[in-house]
Amino acid sequence: MTQKSKAQLLRRLHHGPRILVLPNAWDAASARIFETAGFRAIATTSGGVAVSLGFPDGENAPRAEMLAAIHRIARSVAVPVTADIEAGYGAKPRDVAATVKGVIAAGAVGINLEDGRGAGKPLRDIGEQAERIRAAREAGSKAGVPLVINGRCDVYLRRVGDESERLEHTVRRARAYFEAGADCIFPILAPAGAIAALAREIEGPINVMVGAGTAPIAELERLGVARVSFGSGPMRAAMATARKIAQEIAQRGTYETLLRDPIPSAEMNQMMQTIARRR
Image (cartoon, rainbow, N blue to C red):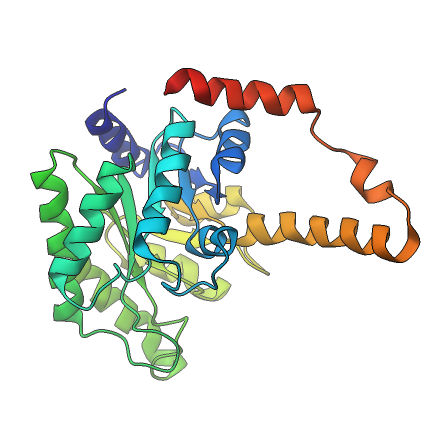
């Protein structure tokens, strides 16, 4: 598939008939594991990629290193890849455009773009964020790739306003972001009780991230959710297993956790050989 056709496919997957389940990879190996499991597309995780590079989440990983990681993930799989670029790595729309240009050069066909400014800071003005979305859309068009833009809305994450106001505020932002060129809206950390209302009130695809209390995928699909993702959860779960291995060896000198259910070396090598053949 060409990069353009991958972008077109990713966009179609947001419109059914089945919910789009997007596992979040943090390196080439995790991406191949998800592809082998049969997922139709893969997302990156900003937190997972940052940690794998030795940085905390929050645009602390240098943009060049983040883009290189996206490139390794995108070239390792045949399915479409969408990249979490956080707030776009810069204050101005031109900065977002430059990052998008790098994402497309890395082989990805979609992005997450958030409207937050960081912990403790107010969200970007709706008009300002709309301009950033337009800049991303234009950068994709100039590159000949119909980029799939997931507009992250941080109203619930940042607890903006009263709880009773957050639904209306999110819907207002969603409408502006769609008008600016977004393909999907991501009301991150919206409570379980608000998801059905958001799916009903937002006239377009919405993305839900799995967390404690999230309904099963079949129920999310029934509620009208178009896309479900997992953030840094898979990476943190994998690191939890690594920590258990380390603690058992250090404290007991045994290897039960290590030897319980590892992927065989031959199978991992076969996955990597598939990557090599695609280069």
